[in-house]
Length: 120
Image (cartoon, rainbow, N blue to C red; front, side, top):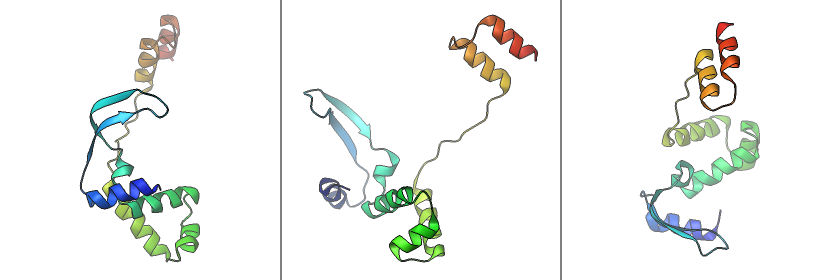
């Protein structure tokens, strides 16, 4: 985690922020508007470090116990607390027919192939 990000986190004191200008690295191109931060960026610096460590440990709670010197229940509780702060996208499974129609609409398959798959 960068020093700048830690300073920003301290300044905002965990309050929501909106980014109004984005500049492409090594470019004079800048975009202005109202941009929300990604959900992980809204976590406290401490929680972000925990999430990054969890990813580095390939999701191993046992490795997290060793790394942070905390118990299994503490790791689980912390993961649950962080998860509650994040919005999750609800994933719905589409039917095979919808998959065929989607593939046809995107030009991935021909009409003949769509008819063949739908008749199966």
